[in-house]
Length: 556
Image 1 (cartoon, rainbow, N blue to C red):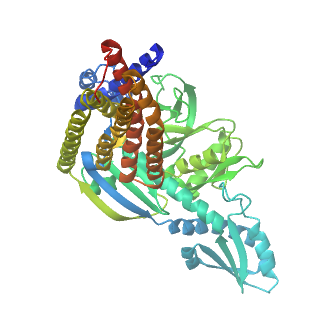
Image 2 (cartoon, rainbow, N blue to C red):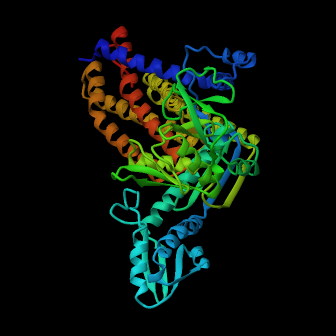
Image 3 (tube, one colour):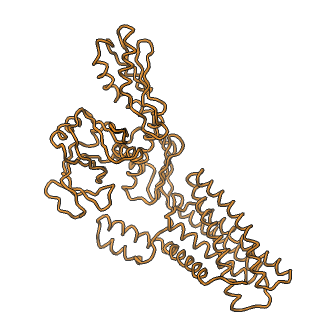
């Protein structure tokens, strides 16, 4: 029997209405974009009459999500940077030298005279020449091995950060391969975090910042003037400070008092800290921060200051045991630990209920005051907004031509049933934009190609169904039975064809990057919406028409 339950009909139409509502803001792109920018500005505290007027351009009760325009459509800057990760090895060795010197000097009578080959740090090695008898080397290796720390990474479990050996009269200290890999990952993660924070501060929309390969970073920022401007933004130094904590509140407008300020917590939404404005030490005095483990084997973060910072930090912690102090990055409190004891020597440890990943991220934030290593820009491109507008117009033209051709073909081939398929095709594109708007996806020129391809593919399912109905009509079955069998017998072919295409889209998304991902996203969403509209929407339209007209015969 050709029928659809009432609850199924309501579900189908409700899904269509929600999809159309999500896609609606894209028809008023400029107004909604100004509304969204004004809302963000007001939430940030810029409650001006201009922002209120811009906020009123779009009703607050309607969805306001947009399909963001990518670099090739809006214009902007493109950079491909290579991070010189080897520079970090040298700094690690230079930071290790004072500790090695300390433990060797403690037993100078055993190890003899110590001479340091500073040039070896360029290759990530620390070479110390021991001028003494031959029995000194084993003892020196034993002493330096005591400085080893476990590698803090999931892949380096059970290994140590340094390897110590003797070559003739030279004591050689190298970073282990596991530590090099962990250091490379941390360096890239830190670089990504710093770049992202710098770019987010200038308020650009939907930047693409992602790691490519071993040591490269792809940076695409729509709406920015030039690649040179983007490089200037990336080079800005983050502001890191260590400040005394006066109190804690949930009121952003709390009166802080003279010499104090109120800053939000980066970890807990709605929590604010009252801090003294004068910092104890700043990020400029921080030389290193690494994930580590405390005495109980729990993940923690260790940090080191330069001599000036170490003296100031030591004096402050000695006088304020039991009091909290705040670690502030870009005017946000990222952590507020309690001082447990005097922290002298310029180094300390931050403990808490951390996972390995959380301790690594906190170390990244602590080091985010400056890029960890230099970067070489391998590729620079500036795309003007005029070229982006040309791409949009070309995309509109291509999509329009595809629409007209497909709509005309379906109408000429299947008559009234072709009209139903065309209605479903229009809804299909609208639902696809609704999905893209809901997740805040970025539309690129390859993404437009995916939409055009979806328009061509969307009617495939309807063609399979209508041809199957034609075959059933030739067997002298009634029209209701022919329609029902047409949908039932074509379903397996439709599902098979679209599942294989969807798997291809997933592979493109996982393995690809940039434009390939943009194409994969629109193709994948297009497959989902086209299957929904072909199997459910067109069937509902045909059943509704059939119930009202009750034709004795039908022409497909």
